[in-house]
Image (tube, rainbow, N blue to C red):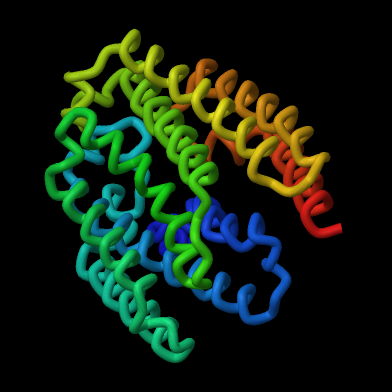
Length: 282
């Protein structure tokens, strides 16, 4: 259990974004496409776990002074650093083997995965302390998931999907920083928070929230070949309003925690998925 916590299995939920290009292209149920997308999901999940473990190793000392992060496996001492290093090596070998035996290692999609790894390592080793750059990397991490999902099945990500995911990602990243800022003790473990204030984060959060809804609304009415898909905007608005309500009510603003800790938000998301699949595939 402590090793599952170490590699942040629950954060694999973010990697569901990899399925979006195939879903909106109307080919998710094609056997080859589904297989490649599942491999992409696993490879990206293991790569993200590598980054989480490396980051925890690097931040172990500061995490011990954090009210929540002190319970992480490395910071708490439940997993020794040598064991964590072995986990990183094993995950790296599994990821390479998974892509190699699926004939997906030597292609453009793998370069995207390498870029994601390098970008996040740079984040862990210093870029996370640079204001705006830190938020941009957090946001672009979500966008890369979508791009990777499209690249691995040779499907171009539409401009509307790109703009929508980018806007939602910036909104979530800013929301995470907002709530970290409001929680006592976080300035001791996240230096970049000294550059932010609540008003700045609030204004930019809701700018990106508005952009996300506008981009999605235009996409649903102009780019999707269905007269019924426009009604999905209703679900998106409700989902974003409920997410915003949760962020403003406390917590640390981590997208996965916000979603998993709210049954209403989960229900709305499931209804959106059912409606979307029904419109696009039935």
